[in-house]
Length: 78
Image 1: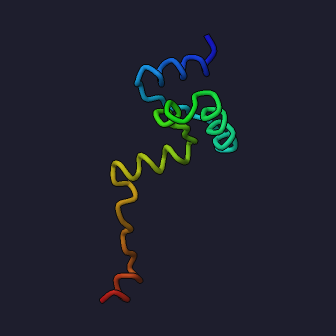
Image 2 (image 1 turned 60 degrees about the vertical axis):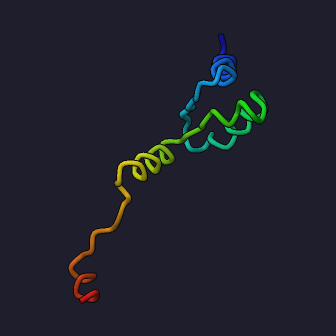
């Protein structure tokens, strides 16, 4: 069974799928997923590059919750 067929099978059965690809292939893969699965099934499939995964994890678990002020920033703020 090809990967595309497995993703289509899982998506049509209601499962959520995540496809991890290198950054340079994310747009092509998103387009291929949309063409292969169609509009409705493609909504349950995420195509993520490593930088998108980092952003998602940072937003979810607070890695990018705020910037810590440095000494100069603290002086300006006061």
